[in-house]
View (tube, rainbow, N blue to C red):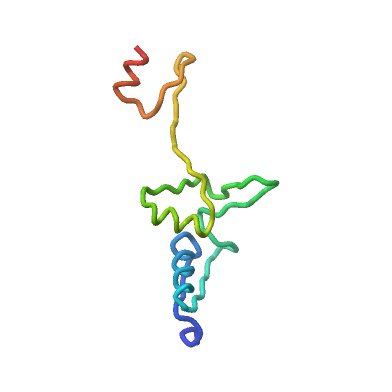
Length: 108
């Protein structure tokens, strides 16, 4: 029976399931992770195609202001620091988004 062999049955190898299994194994627990997809990572799974990481299920950005969490995540896989800073092009000039009163002041 499964309970004779594993401490945990984890359904889903996405971010939470994979992290839980990883931490449980660090504590000496035996885990069985099952997922309907043939890979780990759930929706944050990437494929390396000719040296380019392709986000198979859409773009994903991980961010946190908690240094402890950032350090933990980067101990498993290196993340790039990314700051989302969209801009709008209006009449050939670039303006930061989201719009605020300073943006309108710059425009007019």
